[in-house]
Length: 378
Length: 164
Ligand code: SF4
Ligand code: SF4
Image 1 (cartoon, chains in turn blue, green):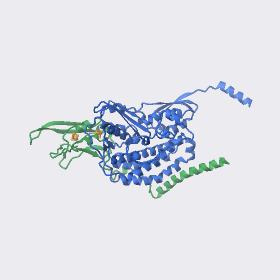
Image 2 (image 1 turned 90 degrees about the vertical axis):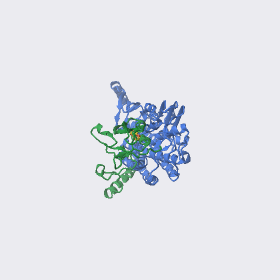
Image 3 (image 1 turned 135 degrees about the vertical axis):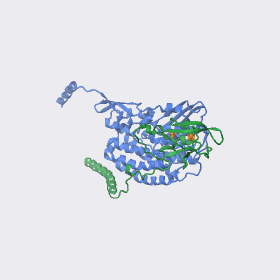
């Protein structure tokens, strides 16, 4: 025993270890886009993560200042492209509230249904990628099988699969397609059958459990301190669902649960999203038979000018609390337009989450906060 | 003891997953029931996009090669990124004797278009509409700059401006 101790001391004298830096990205399959992270490593242990942004900065906020309010809507598709409908909704709601336009129930309900479909499509894609990041390639194919059905519905009703651009100020671009209700119902039946498969394929898988349980724990206080939001924060028990707190569109008419977990580890963040898909289906089921007959767009002026002042609108996208802030001097364009994107806020927690974990866990943590890089870099 | 129990449980969860993939593998191998992928370039003749699919902006022409565009340039101003350029001239109408705008070229830069639909929304005479073609691949970027009005086409004399 003593001998060993002496030996170690001897080695510690001879071999010098030191921390080193490693670049992850900008072109790395696990960063889901062009983002670079500078890792400070001690062996394989992470001491510090420093995300470097700006690789796909497009100055969208500046572009908004030069655009009319109608033109701004389509730019928001290009932020968080997986929640494009909710992003559009945020801008339309902002302008409608500023102008005092109250849309009818038909528009509200259709918007809500499409938003929940978008949320499910986003979570499905995330689930597939989450599996891929932890080494299970199969999940990606299964996720895309179900996502394809949603995309088909979107294509038929909105005209595009991803950047739907379906909201316009004062309503919707088109009425819903004749097949819409039928297809959505078919999808719900299909997905109710398939969602348990997700659990059997990945959630209960022992390898996946070992890689996620107890990894990257964030307490509720830390989550609030870092300003995190969305499913990522709800996994630590922080109630922050805008759909519940500040109901917009038709969320006031439905009865649904805010999914909360208290563990705060990677598995909890995973599980919150899976349960949110059940809740989305619950919301759609409550609304799909209640679409009233009415106009699908309200009358608006051809040139839209906001009154002088500041306006703010928050919506819950698939990633969390998306805020739009506009400052107007009464003209056709805003003088200042600012987006508060959920991915950017969630990224702040990554460093804390990954402290003293291994590089492999960083990939898991990064995957469970579910960032979309164009949403971080606007 | 718990060591063996862990191994047993681990194998069980792996087999649950394998059962699902295995079932799809064999069912689709023999019946192709759940196959959702399509053979894209091979089905090009039968592939039909949805009516609302936004593939490109086109201008409708009737059988006499007439279009509805009176070169009002509203779409050019509505476009957020300068995709549309209207080239027009003033011409004397032989019947009424008034000078009016005549469309020479409705230039559409497909490579810049974000398919937002503001131009179609804004057009007061429904002259432009969505086309469903999405095979835009080309070796030269300049091929994507198109003139939407066909050569020799003229303005439909009976065209109506909708109230929009
Ligand atoms: S669809 Fe949008 S980007 Fe394309 S030409 Fe029309 S207005 Fe411009
Ligand atoms: S396409 Fe329509 S909006 Fe554009 S110039 Fe012609 S008539 Fe005017």
